[in-house]
Image (tube, rainbow, N blue to C red):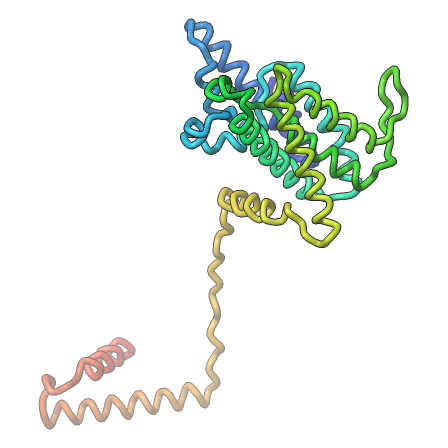
Length: 295
């Protein structure tokens, strides 16, 4: 068992950011499933706990759990939901990394997820169709983030191809367009919240790509925040104490300092003869004491 955990740890440590994002999603999924099993053993429901990390559609609920705008995009409850999202993240993430950096991948993942919540939240609170569902609707999954990565990759390499079963080679730009249209057509379905989130992720991917080609990289602020948090947990290097050795004195310097010290002592002794020991200053008393130790 320890070898298995060491293998997972090494894969995470040495893997790309893409692999780490997949590991985080899978790890969160496993923790949630284990938590639900434990709760069920005690005849308790985990739905209430799960809502605290899902993205709510109701404003009064979201205000109480603002972290859900981030946590929801790493959260999957159903295995096939996780499997499909991670498969698409791996495919499209590989295309993304052919043109962009790993830090940009994380930034687009986060911005895509945030944009997905914005469109989902706006749609459920603006359209009368969802008026009766707002209080009980929650969003979870990495779909919006994956959609943003797909769109950016499709704009950067539109003619790159993916081989699909029963279909053959399909260009990335067509996959992005078809996926977007399917989400748009599904905005009145039972998964309307997820489809609106896909649209938000796609729009963010398009905006990011266009701004990037104009010289504005939206992922830079995200990278700075991530680096700041990462540095909080890095152990600070220990300060090394360096001892500087004094330069040895020459004979002339030594003799000069010795004569000056003897002259000062003579002056102090004369002062004692004239005015007594009590007339000495603290500094003169210290000099006399230091000289007595040398004798």
